[in-house]
Image (tube, rainbow, N blue to C red):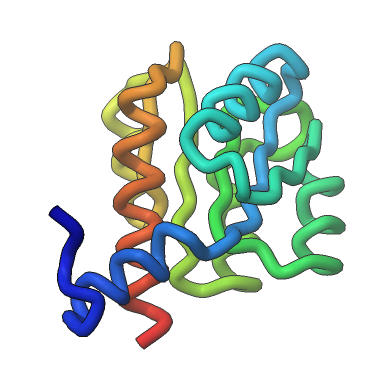
Amino acid sequence: MAGNPNDPRETECRCAKSMVRKVLIVDDSKLARMAIVKVLGSLYPEWTRLEAAEAEAALEIAGQTAIDITLLDFNMPGRDGLSLASDLLKLYPGMPVAVISANHQDEVVRRAGSIGAAFLSKPLTEKALAAFLAEAVQQLGRDAR
């Protein structure tokens, strides 16, 4: 049975799910980026996926294009993912950001949380990414109001 098209809650839900989002994926590993792109493509095929292999390229993309969500690796050459996340959040306050790492040390997880980023463990599972993205969609829907 279809929902009530006059119910504003259902309209908001449909709008939030159907909006095209831009997701920035930052990882020095092409294989890791490809794996994330594959999962994103199955979960949200209409979303735009932008890729960068390092922090400076990510900042350049973010300076040229409005980004909705960022997924980034913690360990990268040059700058670590937390430093990049902090800079991206200055450009886009409140943007959902996930720092992805095999480094599960409490300090890294705490630092991610302290700057407003989620922490996702590697190897990244489709379930963990889907849960983060679902929360990100809800957050973006709340922020749009």
